Amino acid sequence: MISLGLRYFLEVARGGSIAAAAAALHVAASAVSRQISKLEDELGVTLFERRARGMALSEAGLQLAAYANAAELEAERVAAGIRQRNALGDVTIRVACTEGFAHGFLPMCMADFKRSRPEARFHLRVEHPEEVNRHVLEGLSQLALRYTVAQDDRLKTELLCRAPVYAIMCRRHPLATRRSIGMRDLTQVPLSLGDPGTTVRQLFDAACANAGLHIEPAYVSNHSAAFLPMLPGSQIVALSGYLTLMGQMDSAGLVAVPFSNPEMRQRSIQVVTLQGRTLPPLAREFLGLLAERLNAAPRAPEGERGGRD
Image (cartoon, rainbow, N blue to C red; front, top):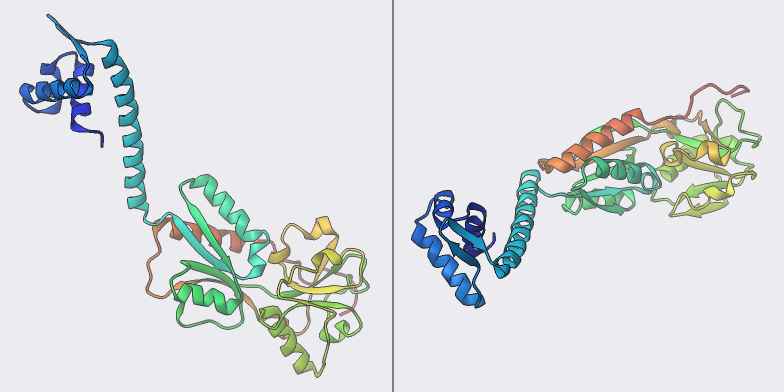
């Protein structure tokens, strides 16, 4: 990737003679000699001191050799990077996810992957489930993580694992010691919910309808984690998945209580790609890490709390 003249110049400097350089380059000695003369004419300096036993670099030649060696090393580094990217395919991993994965789980997975694969780059979009699907369908994202209650046939499900909704509350909350709670238990507490575009809200509305209840939440947001800082020391109950709060439960003094209503257990974590699309090697490798972490992710204990149902 450096010029022909510099390549020939470096070989003469390394070999100590035009004959040695010609042999190393597999060219005629006259071709090497012409390139050296051309360089000297262009620079207006003598690059070599001609001696009986070969050629030694002049002062100007030493300066040019230092530059040419650095340029050659940089060219090799760039070429190696290009070859590696060509072998790996696209090194930018484009991921879409719903909000619950963006608080801790997905960023931690990205950081861990980057440590083992420093060449990887990430582009993350956080959207509602419908938008997450659209990003994959339109090729804007290579893969996506979402909570779902129904699968989209246009997308390929790479992983599907159970992700029920829990009632999240302070450890000192009156409902915190229950083995499970139902929708009727939420009628007398201030409730924190995501907006109707979230799977949690969809399941909550279905459970209320099936129980013949109308519960008006006290706090609603399109950012479901907005009110979580209000839970410690309060009577508020938030509805959320356990993975969303991974690593925060103990430090915030919170507990996750499962629901007795079957609707609240009809949710899954889904990792999807576009049907018929082959992921680049790095994206496929990251997908493997996600599957490993999701399968090993901690879940709220079921049926271990004392007290009545």
